[in-house]
Amino acid sequence: MRLFALRGATTVDANDAESIVGATESLMLEILERNALRPDDAVSCIFTLTNDLDAEFPAVAARKIGFSSVPLLCAREVDVPGSLPRVIRVLMHYYADEGHEARHVYLGDARSLRLDLEGAQ
Image 1 (cartoon, rainbow, N blue to C red):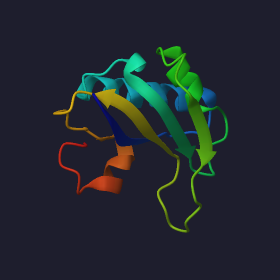
Image 2 (tube, rainbow, N blue to C red; image 1 turned 135 degrees about the vertical axis):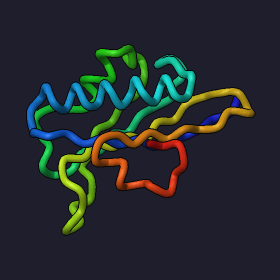
Image 3 (cartoon, rainbow, N blue to C red; image 1 turned 120 degrees about the vertical axis):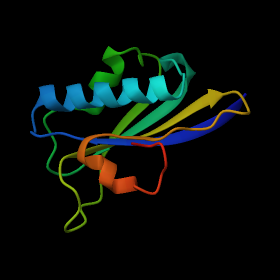
């Protein structure tokens, strides 16, 4: 087994709890599916939100889908002028077999953030 890290991001249309939880849940489920992981494989997750999102913690969605014993942290993204609005990002650390290849996941308008990562879309 080896420790891996992967990135993911998604966007929401509105700053409300339902949108933030729904988008985060979709992102995390897609990360799990594409990487053949379970929540128990995770070591930790760090979530960031752009300054225009403050209606809910993304960790609420992660807990809802089974990340109950995983350390989760929510923080603010750097507010760079002209950057993509309403973005939720995650950095997830997890254990997998040595030959595993991390598959990053970018959904919604966040796909434009990492067009260089083949298969991240």
